[in-house]
Length: 436
Image (tube, rainbow, N blue to C red):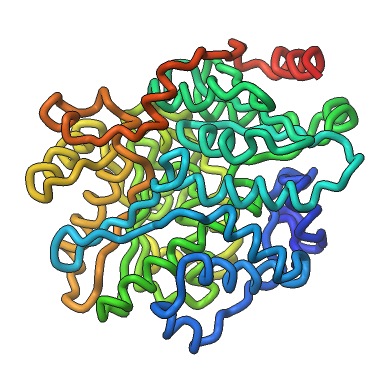
């Protein structure tokens, strides 16, 4: 697998190099030189394959000979060892539950696959791998569990003070071992900026072997395509062959993976980018002007991103085809009041408790279907996190319906360990150098 930088198309690096370097020095993002199209026989018979089988076929097409088939199968069977079921709520409305992994969020797909790929590529005697990751909520927990105890690795997670839920914070700060948590007095965008700056700092690059576990890493993006193919396979079993996906979107890695799956041949009719008030991309899709802005804190905190990193990849996927992108993707945005109304409607009408991100995706699908309804097309909205992660969002009557998994109850018994820092790079750099 050969990759290039979005800022320099003549760049050529291997999959291993892209995984470990995470972000090119020119501050672009890595993209595959060629995007293979899956053959029609496979796509038309997806319903005959299990999720791990689908994942292997898709990954093998992208990664090629960089990881031998036997080893790639073993990585996938270890990483993707949980389900991603679609649940029917009503005619032509399905929810794709992506929170059945250990951290109870869709980020488990990317984090577990990436950690195992990195571990596979690490050779004995090599310099310790320092993984830096910024999180707006769920990424950090998934990465922490994905890398916990992985030899010769150390993970530093940056999260915005007071802007993640209690359970999310517990998942970041109670692991110990090779996992460190840093509480930044700022926003997710500030955390993300610190991580990006660290990768281009000469002294840090010489001192540490740095890589990222954010969705800027290509090894996070690839496994997120798996569940789009799997959802389509489940629809085929129901006799449905046309689908629209509504995707809760923050850093735009999730929908970016869906668009990559579409480029590989997955027959998706349309994508819906559903955001909260951090609506940089929906505004671009309406106006044609991409204008990043400071992020605003909301109930759907994992989507509080004012300058989505992965938009660069999406723009690159459709370079010279911006009209195709605008015809394929529709953007919607919702504030907290509308989010709460959606949560209540879903509970009252379907007896289903949705997290705030999931509720926004449902609302966007509902609004799109009212304008574009087609009887032969299923609408699938992505549920990205277990509702137990957001206990303060629900009234008592609804919160009582939420089944709190055992691993969450155990978190409350553990002691929090984190370091508090400001949002200036100097302070973060000093912390890294003083705690090597």
